[in-house]
Amino acid sequence: MFSFKPRWKEQLVVRGPGGAFVLELPMGILSAYLPTEAAWREKAPDWVLDLWPQLKAELEEWCRDHKARFHIDETANVWPFVERVLGRPAREIAGYEERKNRQMPNGEPGDHPWTDIVVYRADVYSALAAALVREIATLADDRTKRELAHVLNEKFNPQGRPDVPKLERYLTLFRDRLRRDASARGFEADKK
Image 1 (cartoon, rainbow, N blue to C red):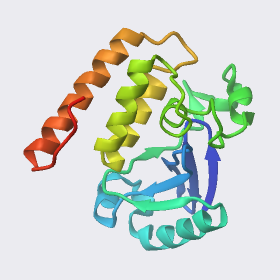
Image 2: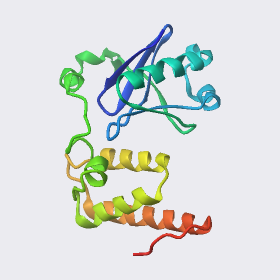
Image 3: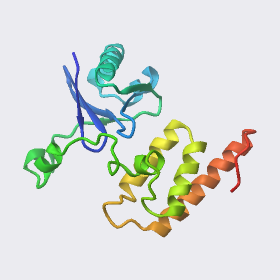
């Protein structure tokens, strides 16, 4: 009933009998995220609201076949699939074909700043920023890690000219908030 196609920006396009939508597909460790059935009712297109069990089964199979992890998470996103931009077919927009045909990230160094810092131990922005990201990775839950990975790639993309001092301030505040939250819940967090 459903077909799945990864595309750039860590997205999985899902096509079904009533249209298409996009799910999260992080590439650091290939993983597909589906909202819980209750959250699905709040996020999904109307045509697919009652198809969650079927989608879940088919997405699990796709993940097995593609050696991807499968997660059900109430915070997972569902986005509309956009084939038209400013009233024109997306393929007519400058650069669309080049982006569409770009090889999907495969977890290798250089694919994503989060993976480069946490997995490959690279100091992508600065030694301080990398140390903060690695510490956050030890303190944060999966949702928070995904959110930070998104911020790193979108707001501080190393391919552009990221404001490293601003990133270091952001990461310090982020880390300090996680430490306070952990302490408030009775956990010990190293204060380096």
